[in-house]
Length: 469
Image (cartoon, rainbow, N blue to C red; front, side, top):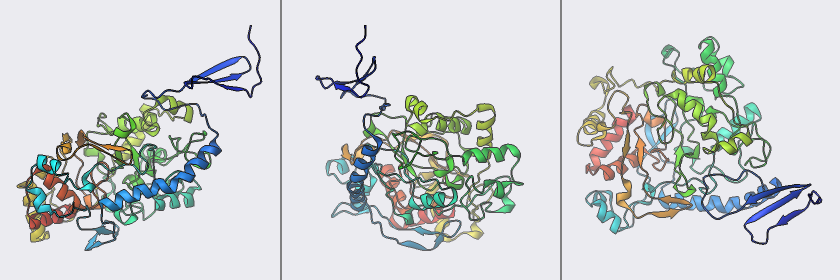
């Protein structure tokens, strides 16, 4: 025989290890434990209004802590390279932005062994893993200019009440980026300067794509529920959300440098920040997903909807409205369109992906020679697309002691993918987590990691070559 209780009665267990909610004759027990878990909580124990008020109040302090980390690491000034632009004309930021430890130079660091750099605590702050704007919380975060344009076109708000994007706009890819198609190179930028959304995709692409590809593009710009943007009460948007689209991160099939945390690592402090990679050139790539466990763009497309959108948690995915794509048609259609996305034109490259001498400067040609020779860059980044489609472990942990940085435990990164370098000047920031703001930072990083000891002039020449790709 069951005893009836008022529906509003909630009894807290005196042991403080469980909450017992008594509704009618049904007893629901929610275990609360400090033991590590692979699962996110599913049942809300706090009213949404209270969550939003609490997290909104904490936002300023959280963002200030992150901005303090960035200021400690980098020179964040707007200092563009003269006469160097991205494909649609945005200025490219130049110079080494990572700050050195006091009293050291890059040449001095290059002459030290990893053990010496580690023992003297000389690893530059900007070379440590970069934490998410709020690493303990995580989730998708979009640059302000993308939020503004989506709100204008679709009245869909990608603003989070708990945090904002952190990197300054001048270090991000141009917005909106152009779209080049392998099937219609004669058309140039088929986006015509617009951010492609559900509002305009048909107008822009009808007559250029076949019906399968057009349907694939529609799905890529259709919002579906996601961990932070959904209709449930454990979202991070003020109002119930229709969700996000693939192109909210991969803007126009490229990237707007939106950030997230990888879904396949636990516990939270070990999860890597993600710098959204471009989808340009996926037709020549063979490794996908944050740990590169996926071997085709079809696998990646399906995985994103089923798991990555929800931090790799199928329980919360079900609750928040996971969108299961049909492999034989929808996934195939999306992947077929993605495979059409081409790299931007590189007029100085010949048919083998190397510099044509008659079109290139002496410094660019010298940079190519160093890239393929002394610098050893071509070992992992061979022409013509400058990727070997493999994983490599840089073993950066040789250079520093593990430490906590704003909720991110800076330790071993493990193997990372060799990304294509075609069109690289259009795709800042760099490395898998966006810790390197410029190409100069990237060359300094790899000069230390690979210990090839390039001179200042050699490093400048390599950067000139990379900007020509």
